[in-house]
Image (tube, rainbow, N blue to C red; front, side, top):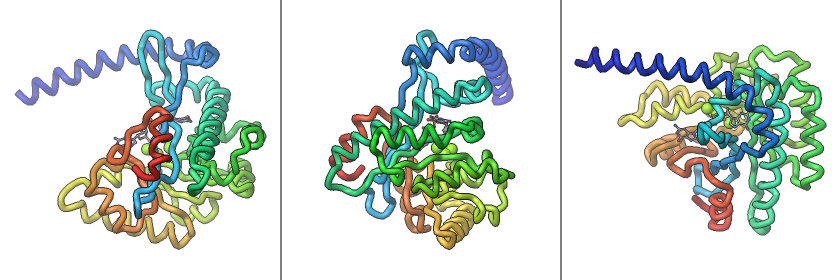
Length: 284
Ligand code: C2E
Ligand code: MG
Ligand code: MG
Ligand code: MG
């Protein structure tokens, strides 16, 4: 019985794969007009201090409200935008929009601590010669302090990166922009290599957090996270954890010394007014 259920599942998966291949082409050709038509929007997910639950900032996560297919997540179109180069104008739009939003939160939160805005950068954006100018420009025009911006770059995008690729990130880091290594722990990077990268934050991938959901937590996962946190802290890097879905995970990660967390347990990504309320309430 299990076998036939499995078979059906695979057939369905095949049909889905075909449909996806067809839509992939359609989505790719629709991307440029979608940007002009304003079909993209951003959801924000709070980042909280594990210690006291106060809001540290938010990550900007782009979505596409497609007229036929409905709301599409970034996994459906970011790779296509990367491939065609549209990621450069799209990424610039995300940055502008997210920075504008962060500026507004700053205004609401005038007497509170600084709030961070995290924006994802993909490899093509890293290679784009206009990256630093674009970011400096957006910051200057908005008046947001560089220290309030954190750019998230995946570990895999920086594996084997040469100085040419690191130079723009170094420049941004020198201006005070934080660089986070996203999805850390999935890319088999050489840990000693971390010293060479201009990063100030490690974002521990969700796969580690998952091991903490079991009761008792997977002892190997605990050891690994403990080791990463201690290495990160000795290199003066902050540790953020992704994908915290339960109170038990949050407790474990706090006990292991992680600094900030993000996940459904605190809040799903949502409209910016959600963050307005959190900021005003000062905690999740
Ligand atoms: P990411 O940067 O690692 O973002 C975290 C992803 O985990 C988000 O998926 C978020 O919705 C999801 N997530 C957060 N908390 C939980 C949780 O507790 N449980 C589970 N299961 N998932 C959780 P999303 O929004 O689908 O984004 C996927 C990826 O797309 C992002 O991964 C990022 O790499 C990329 N992306 C999103 N926005 C942008 C953008 O503006 N530019 C670029 N270049 N990439 C983006
Ligand atoms: Mg990210
Ligand atoms: Mg991530
Ligand atoms: Mg991830």
